[in-house]
Length: 205
Ligand code: SAH
Image 1 (cartoon, rainbow, N blue to C red):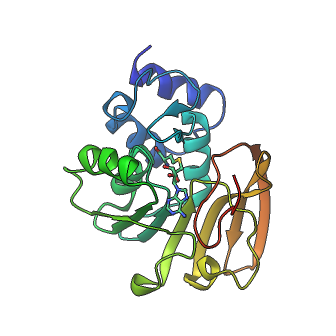
Image 2: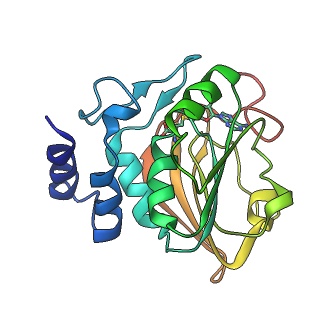
């Protein structure tokens, strides 16, 4: 399989819908970020962390609805694959991404060195990053135990901001799409992600 065939597969399966997300996926060879890049399954990074299956990545990005010029916060850089896609989607905008584990951070740093509109930080992103708030979009790529209306991540969204995150228990979550302008939340896909660590993550794993 090739990157192109992977993208065609994601379109056929209905995970990938828009030209914008399709172009970002075509321009980003998943082989630059992981082994066995083109099969639709999670892949290991380091420290027992895994990067999501491309179908889940595409599906979350479709719901995130990223436009050119936006400021996007990502929690869970992992391999940097999703960060690279976000970088292409924001174009003149900016991506700020947090990774908890230093070994994983080092991998991401290497993989993302040519992405000029990306800032990556080593540390706990579970309560967001107040310093550069508010954000147009926030995406969390590790499982969140809860997402209350007064959660710091929601408070760091712009009025018309959107947040996409897996929310639930340790072994079962739903991808939740939160729309700040309508104050609505929709559960769009059942998933299993690695747990979010840190202050607002899972304490025992
Ligand atoms: N989006 C990534 C996959 C991320 S896997 C990719 O495309 O490769 C989830 C990542 O979240 C893991 O690397 C994990 O170490 C990280 N993580 C977990 N808790 C975190 C926290 N509190 N802050 C920042 N990163 C966290």
